[in-house]
Amino acid sequence: MSQSGLPFDDIRELIRTMPGPDTSAAQKVAERDAMLTKPPGALGRLEDIAIWLASWTGRPPEISRPLVAIFAGNHGVTARGVSPFPSEVTAQMVANFSAGGAAINQICAAYDLGLKVFDLALEIPTGDISKEAAMDEKNCAATMAYGMEAIAGGTDLLCIGEMGIGNTTIAAAIFYALFGGSAKDWVGPGAGSNSAGVERKAEVIEEAIELHKHHLNDPLEVLRRLGGREFAAMAGAILAGRMQRVPVIIDGYVATAAAAILHAADPTALDHCIIGHVSAEPAHIKAVKKLGKEPLLDLGMRLGEGSGAAIAAGVVKAAALCHSGMATFDSAGVSNKE
Image (cartoon, rainbow, N blue to C red; front, side, top):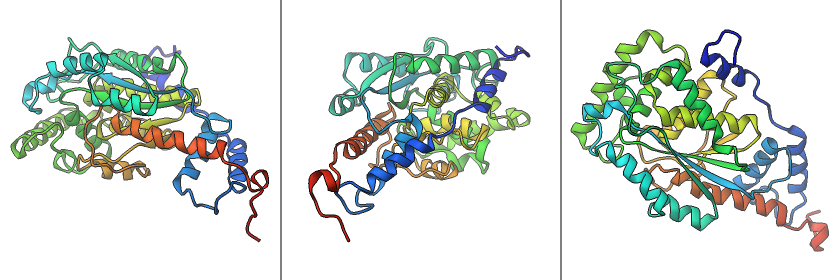
């Protein structure tokens, strides 16, 4: 614990002491890449991914224990009618994940990925952000710490995902607080809201920003006031990945909002992360650009569940295998260019 005893001070200290990339490991991968049996740059972004993996693991690219972590939370703001689905769907979908019946279960099976699902007190929704803070500092920091435990069993690639009715409203509020504009710049249909539903979401978010506007200069205050438990847990998991040199793939609109909190605290905080895909949620690509990132895939998806990150993990695994498994010109007896 910090000497001050304030829960967020421990989080700030972790951010302040984040390790940087292993440039020596990255250089070795770049040098081997130049000797592989292909024209220089022919594998495009796969070559960049191999170097990125080495930068953050400190070793040649290899993925043997990939993990998808889904964090599920409920939100008091759903009482304002911001989602066409009732909040009990969150728990029902968590049960569906456990039973193997969701899309993410099939994607994990296709790419041989592990899956963990974290139920974050679904029976106790966070505060309605239009009327009060979502969490107090102690609970927010504790939930971040809980998220850090996602990699406790060991993994070498972490995919971040979520489930939570109403959480696209929460994500839009976070983006608005961090990046400015208006609520209408950041809201979208989410799980299927019609135009009237999108308008309602924007109105509720404007109320929330007005209520909390004097406390939004601190990214961690943005998280506790406007966020939710799954957002805090995802931010914690991403930070744990950095501290333990585990590369991270971030999923779509909602997961990106959690990551944006860390980026606002330190612009280098997401250097060990890639954005798995660009969501069909309209404002996602704008948020990704604000983070200085380029999505790996664009499949028109907007499901959540870590689904886009999981498909991107298949690409990352392929990048690692191409680098480690390909022969060099010398070993294969293939003539290199003059």
